[in-house]
Image 1 (cartoon, rainbow, N blue to C red):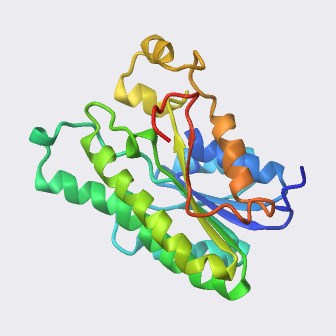
Image 2 (cartoon, rainbow, N blue to C red):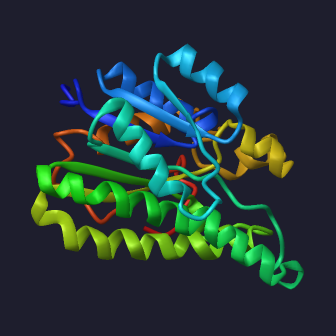
Amino acid sequence: MNLGLEGRRALVMGGSRGLGKAIAQALVAEGARVAICARNAERLGATALELGVEGIVCDLSAPGAAAALIRETEKRIGPLDVLVVNTGGPPPGLFVDLSDAAWRAAFEGLWMSGVGAIRSALPGMRARRWGRVILITSIAAREPVANLMLSNSLRAGLHGLVNALSREVSADQVTVNALMPGYTLTERLEELQLDVTKLAAQIPAGRLARPQELAAVAAFLASDPAGYVTGQAIACDGGLLQSI
């Protein structure tokens, strides 16, 4: 299938490793011109060189950083056609253990950074009457995962944003979708210290996902043929979710 991404311009937030890197690689393979951002300058530079993309150092938790990121991206590669909001997961914790500061930090990093980037990129997409906004969330947004109170709560809210915003911009040929990764072989699993063998036993597919499998879904959502898919939260989880 021709995804129609040749020459399109895309930004993948959190693109130096894991799912973000895989998505950036998939978009490059389809002929898109891609920029990625991350906080770690050394890792970002290595990934940008490896993939042949623009690398922009950015700490998305800082107020106003997302809007500045969009301006810098468009300065380097031109007006954005595709925005992949991939902000990474907040730290684990139970409700009883989380302070007000932890909630505020998670909200800024996970919610406001995405809102800021979308707010800055959306007017141009609507004016050009073509755009794709993809939010990488988690299966935790639909079925809570133990000890991930911050992610369970805030990511579920992002799905409300996706559904509501998609209705506001669909007439301008801009789609807004969420993509929910299940347990995937990335650094995030190591950070959460999860037992891969036990996880795989819970998944109907009998294994964890490869980042490239989720990236293929993201590339489709960014494509021309996906122009009628909007306002959706799509899981790539090997059948783990019990609700649809």
